Amino acid sequence: MEDITISPYDVKEKIHNEEDVLLLDVREPGEFKTAQIHGAKLIPLKELSLRTGELPKDAEIIAYCHHGVRSLQAAHLLTSKGFNAKSMAGGIDSWSQQIDGHVPRY
Image (cartoon, helix red, strand yellow):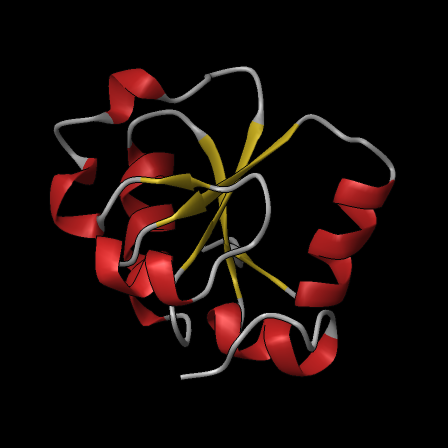
């Protein structure tokens, strides 16, 4: 089975290189309000299977959550539906520690 995780560093590079990437936040709205990555689209994991029509089929989707568990579920769901999806390892917590310290940790 293909590894569907991607490091925060690799996500940063894709964004920096302006690759066709959609950051998908699969946390709950309260978590999103607390901390988010600029430009991310919020679709909570529990709503994802009903809202896949809102996602582009022609872009790479990188899901993230708090620590990486929900985003891994999201990436598996999306790949099973034909999307090019990955899960950001360590979630927004790792993003805050490794990439952008301005993103609050909680």
